[in-house]
Length: 246
Image (cartoon, rainbow, N blue to C red; front, side):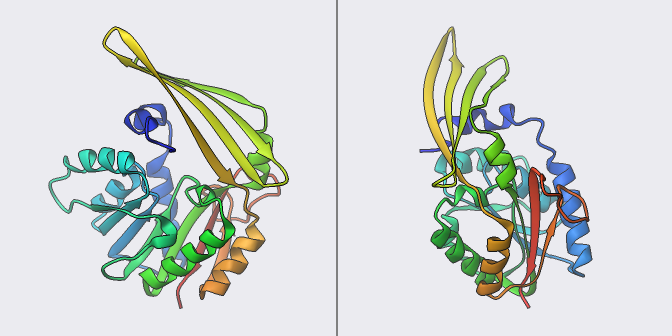
């Protein structure tokens, strides 16, 4: 299963992810929509980096993820937050069910691409719609078709002094799936433990996502370039999408 072995090393291998810049763009977007959120759900929250940033902004936050291992890391990190700590729950996005509706739902770092069945993603959108208060906002980003197609056959290496991750991407046009095969070496004392994971991402088109959001009841669906208040270019690698519950 994805992230079983990678969870313990995820933050070290993704130390260059600009979470603060993503949050700054979220704030621009909710200002564009005239929203002043007090509560939020962070979908596919992973190790909780964005969840904690939202909590530090004063929002009441619930982090949701399908991976128990990633949530364990998130809960450990949240232990350092003595004021307004977030809560975490294990749920798949298509099974989302919150105890109370929230003002804001976010899903960063292509969590939507990880929902590899279109029917499941449509159900996810319907669940997010129900989880939002009237006027609430749903913000997410995707790896674009252009990016996933361009990854085909490429090999990447991420490492630090205690973990070494080698991964190869393969894109299949027929299934629209990008497969990441990962070999992970983690240092344990004088030895290195090897594990392997496979991750899948589905190449969604912006037009179909917009239609499915509309079908779920959302309005004011807008698309943006990567952290910019402008339309995405044809070769945009990461695309942000905003949608509002009326």
